[in-house]
Image (cartoon, rainbow, N blue to C red):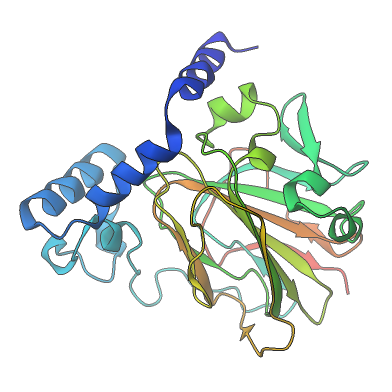
Length: 284
C-alpha cells in the first residue's frame, strides 16, 4: 500500500469535508470583483487551464468563480464523433479504470473493487448491469467541467444518494476502499435504442454542487436518498448534449449492460480523453 496515499486519506478523515465544501462554495459564488478575479487567475496558473478554448477568454465576463469553472467552450472545440454506433466520452478527463463488470464488481484501483449495487443504491437496478461494462473518468480541476450524454437517450430516472466528500483523485482511489460507492452521487439512467445505460455523477471534496440541465442544483448535502421518476416526461438528448456540470474536480462513471458495448483499445487507465471522442461502440 502507498503510505503517502494512506496519509492523504487519514488527513481527509479528520477534515470537516461538508462544512469545508460549503465554505468554499460561498467564496466560489461571490461576485466581489477582486475576489472572483483573484480566484480565477490563481486557478488558471495553478492548474494550467487552457482559457483559449473557453467561449470567453476574458475573466471579467464571468460573474463569479463558479461561472468560470463551469465555463462553456468555443463551438467546434470538442467535435462529437458522428458514427451512429459510437459511444463518446461524457467529459474531459483521465480514465481511472474501464472494462468488464465481473461478479457484480467494478474495479476501483489495482487490487480494489466495489459492488455495482452499492454504487447505484438499488440491487434491482444493479442486476440490469450484471456482467456489463463500466468506465470511470476523473475530471481534474484543470478540465472542462460540463458533462455530456455519451449516446442519444431519454432520461427515465435519477437517484440522489448522500454520502461522504472524499477526494476522488488517484491517491485516494488507491487507499480508500469503496470510494465511489461512499461519496455523494447522482445516478442517472437513460433509455436508448441500444438499451439502457447509466451515468453516475460522483461528488468530491470541495465540489460545491452537481447541477443537471433538467433539475438544476441536485446535491443538497446530507439527507435521505431521493428518487425521481422521469419516465413520463420527454427528456430526450442527442449524443453529446450537455446534461450537467460539476463545480470542482470530480468523477463520472458509465455503466452499460452485458454485451452492450465494446470499449476502444485506447481506453486504458490514465489515458486522457476529451468530451465527444469515441470511447466505445454499441454491439447492436
